[in-house]
Amino acid sequence: MSSKILIIEDEEAIATMIKYNLEKEDFEVLTASSGEVGLNVAVANNVSLILLDWMLPNMSGIDFCKLARSRHELREVPIIMLTARSEDEDKIKSFSVGADDYITKPFSMQELIARVKAVLRRTAPMKEKGVIEFADLKVDLTTCKISRGDRYIHLGPTEYRLLQYLLKKPKHVFKREELLEKVWGANIHVELRTVDVHIRRLRKALNAGGEADIIRTVRTYGYAIDNEINQNDNQDLDE
Ligand code: CA
Image (cartoon, rainbow, N blue to C red; front, side, top):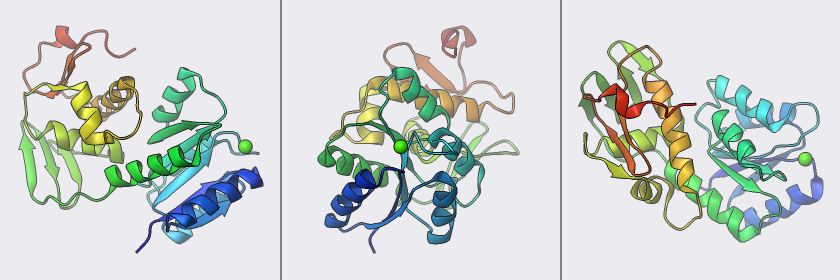
């Protein structure tokens, strides 16, 4: 069964070109020219991934992302933002509203397809089963339910994979390069800072109930899941 991809893009020429190229790769492709229409199409068709233009009439790409993440049916659907803006701040902003990747226009079709495949690969349902427990943290690999104590935690697909990878060896500090390779895939270009952005989101979600920080940061080196952190080690990491 091929993956269903939704393109939300108001520039018809761009949408058509992307659709054509994705169909050549055997993807099923749907298009919408506004966020409002896109939202309905995404829900009705159970799409596997959304390619989302940043600059849309009425509802912006950022607003769409926020809305999609607040909706139960779309919470887990990976979103790649397409944008003509290349500022780092925009990139961080798109990640902070729940996008999984970010591509700057103009891009090559080859790059776009590689990114689509990489995001689908890393957000594919996990094959492993069972429950991982560490301190008060519990991850059920079958149901993808995560909790700390009695509190259930919702994570985006990338944060989930990141957490799962870190839990392979609790207390072990994984290098950022390794996390990038294992969680994002080595064949695409993603900056190391992307790891930091997603760790920040993961940490925020894991600690949202006021629990002790469970992610150790070793500056410019890497990260570990650890329940015995000297809080000073992690200071000034979150802006
Ligand atoms: Ca546009």
